Length: 317
Ligand SMILES: Nc1ncnc2c1ncn2[C@@H]1O[C@H](COP(=O)(O)OP(=O)(O)OP(=O)(O)O)[C@@H](O)[C@H]1O
Ligand SMILES: [Mg+2]
Image: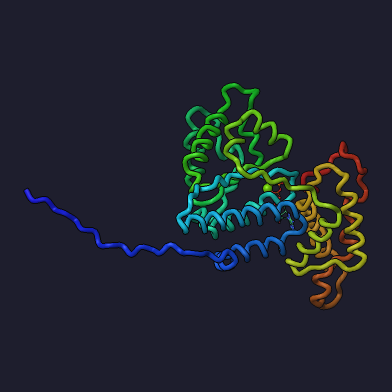
């Protein structure tokens, strides 16, 4: 019986660098570009942007330490994003996925956004396969769980949500080098959720709070959104928009930047109708891209009482 001995070809050993230029890494990894885009595209959110810059710095240093053979541990990157509706949580989560991908912490950098219904089944035996299917889709990227507290229903003893929670906790622990989970929702409910689910709290390293936008920030968000679509407000329309924001904030279902996006969709609809009905000759680009005061002032928001008990329709959010 002959014994075969395999002699492995010597692999070239990558030399350990003696020094790493963090600035150079910052630029060549593309992290600099992601942060610059974040700064440019998103109005306000100063505390959020600061936390993201800090996280990026930590990860760049971790990466450099790893390459130098210093003690390192894959950092826990699971996060929670708390804030009111329309404060930019989903938008920032997508940027975060891109950032983590460029830093090499996740293979693909995609974001899978889910709510309770995507993870939890209606019948016995349905939850585990549903949750696992979503986890499979999210591997190598970010799993974003919106209104995560709905996973936990203490009033229902036999709730299937518990099963999903257990699977999530296991994967968050064992596969944290290949999947980042971001839990999102209102701050108070999220706090209560963490109190009842200490397993989640201990697996989440970064809590980022998204403040409500100020009136001025909402106005700048409106201008930015319109700019991206090649529209602009004329002077009286800008004044009307300032009034709109102040009023809208006091009304039900106010949803920060989302309310602005919806208001602008309706303003463009009114502008189109106005042009269609009044134009009696060719229209130039300026006319086609100008929002006038009347396109804003026709909103129901101006005739509604500033009282949260009064109901606005879903489309007015
Ligand atoms: N700082 C910002 N600058 C510009 N646009 C913004 C900003 N924040 C949010 N937006 C825009 O507002 C809309 C709502 O944002 P997003 O969906 O990220 O909010 P959210 O916090 O996830 O809301 P929800 O809780 O309702 O899911 C999006 O169209 C987004 O592009
Ligand atoms: Mg969202």
